[in-house]
Amino acid sequence: MPSTSTDARTPPVAVWQLLEKLRGKDLVDWRVAPLDDRPSIAERNLDIGFPFGWYAIEQVDFVKQGEVKPLRYFDMDLAIWRGEDGKVRLMDAWCRHMGAHMGHGGKVHGNLLECPFHAWRYDGEEGVVVEIPYSKSIPPQVKRKCTRTWPVTEANGWIWTWYHPDASVAPMWDVHVHEEYGDPDWTPYDMHEWIIYGSIQNMAENGVDVAHFQYIHGTAGLPDAELRWGEWGRGADVKARMGTPKGMVDGLISYDTMGPGQSWVRFRGIAETLLVASLVPISEDVLRVRYGFTQPKSQAEGPGAGVAKALIRDVCKQLDQDKVIWDRMKFETQAIICEGDGPIARFRDWYSRYYARPEGDPGLRAVG
Ligand code: FES
Ligand SMILES: [Fe+2]
Image (cartoon, rainbow, N blue to C red; front, side):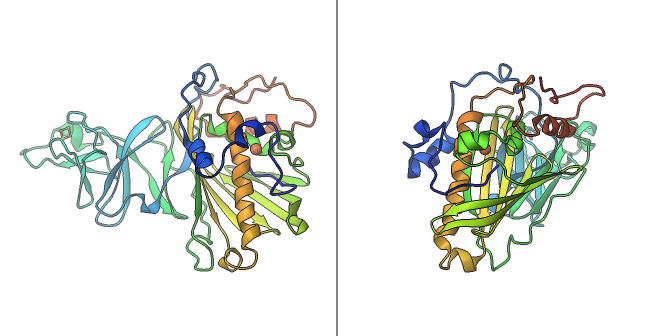
């Protein structure tokens, strides 16, 4: 999570040696580069499944009307398409006939997905085969639901899907809608992307990890942070004095989450900014992170443009700094917490609600 910055130009601290060499394209490439020598998922205690919730998997223009594409998230191969009615559908990728991957070479037929191998046609809402052009009959096993279909919605410029380890569990809350998206007075998203070789829970824990702000980001903790713990979302309002090229300015940073996959941050004071984040697991130790920043055009294109851009750079720099740690850290189930660490135990206890676990299983709440 972004924090208060003492100065947008403050050099990074512990991870400086690694990041100082990276500039421009090198930095952008490093953010998504493979990391092949990392420890195993089991060694790092990351074999815990995925927390359930809505996830922003792609931006809305990823799949156009009549288009099919392959996707891989949640350790699963998926096929996504947009029907003639303009609606996006998402389904498990493998055809129940003979196992072709329908995301590669599949076709959109009306609103149906047609398998590239023998043209069986699927209804993406019911998960049934409704047409087999060369056959007089449809086998009964595929006339009823025979494959997983994923709930999909579009909001804030993103295509969202609901993940739950039990495919029959319907969405338990709604995606939060941001009015700024699509408002002609706000800029289109300025997008930045990372691959984090760690878990989505570790990343979320960062926001309450008070002590790391000083050592990783070179900033002063979370002064005046008011934490909010809701039923399915949490957040904080942080009052901060932020250093700018024009001196110290009083700022307010509010971050919010709705489920594990939706989070957003509002910055006020120094430069008004809405950061819309997409966090989506590809596998248990690979997390795709995209940040979209939108700002009032009057500010982004006016005399405050330099400060507005510096804020975006600073927030991205903070994620770079955290990435160095997240890429290799293990999930320490017996973390030994000291005074000044912030509400780590409370966070873990709270976050455990996103895991579907048998009654009595404490999940990942443990703190030593
Ligand atoms: S494998 Fe899909 S139609 Fe045969
Ligand atoms: Fe951080």
